[in-house]
Length: 149
Length: 292
Image (cartoon, rainbow over all chains, first blue to last red; front, side):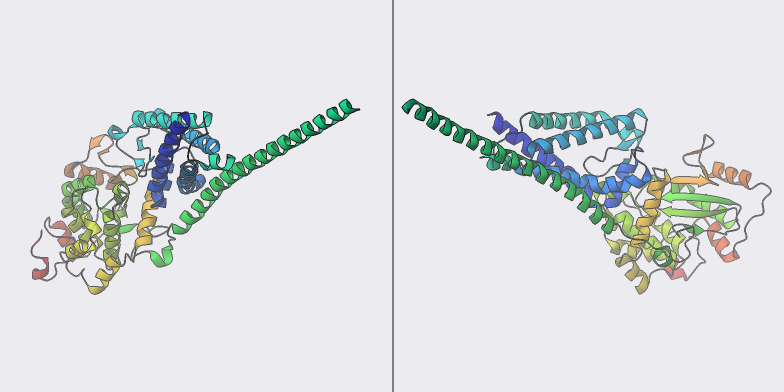
């Protein structure tokens, strides 16, 4: 039973990461700006992160979808979410008004349109799912299971 | 003797079993290692490929070949309007689809055109196009390119005024359809032509539009309109006073105290000073009729 719940968690997280990644690849310039407005990274790192992060998300999605290296993929997923939560919290604390750009978009918004609470809570939910897979990486319908058989 | 043999057999079997278990454990470890390596390779490859591909997709911009005529600045990203000798410089960042820009234009256009005509100010426009990002639209970029096409034939400011006077709702990406931009160009005497239409339809200044937006992204200003009077923000307030036609004129006059004004060709000045006309010399009556 737990293995089947794991499968559902795995596929669910895969869909979230695939959605997040795909939404950010059509406009590289917008993806870079979404990173820039956090005012955390120096300008030289803005583009590598803006360009690379969506593909990291897609790789995690792919690995979770097929269930290959589930524990590692879940660890990467969890680390990414921790970084995202910390970044949003930092922006919030510094009084900057942005859209987190979590699922595409991003950039500055009016102060009344920030949604930091919702964004952080949502990411915490995904973090819990990642935690489940880190603790119980054995799931049904996975390449891991098929290779171990 | 026989017991010795028994012991020898058992230990041999045990040894074989132990051997097999060791081999299986080693094979399992090998498989696990292969999975770990594969996983890390997939992740690393995705990131590297992603960075390379997205780098390749970001358009390269060359100021020498990609900027419309008459643009200024280090990399020719700015569109200048007005006499370059005018003592005050107004810097305006605007997105063609931005509703606040439309409100700014509607309220301030007449005043700004009069100040231009009097040689009190020159304007440097930065045509941003980030509103398209929110709904993967095309209207801002299409309009910015069309404005560059107009700039290239010296009709930027008139066309700029026409676009703001006919701006669609922000949620309506009407200018994704370039033919609407072309039909609006017919309101500017002398603008519409086969080469202008080709310029609009072929997105001729696309890489320039991207470069202007990229410059805005890095500017630290994060909304439009951003209006600067001699480098100091003047919208929505200037030294904590609200912008208005009268206030703006006062601010400019105060900034210009004791400085000579620029002179403009009288025909352009006359056209600018008229509140209903666009700032180009009056052309044929038929072409300019039908809008104000």
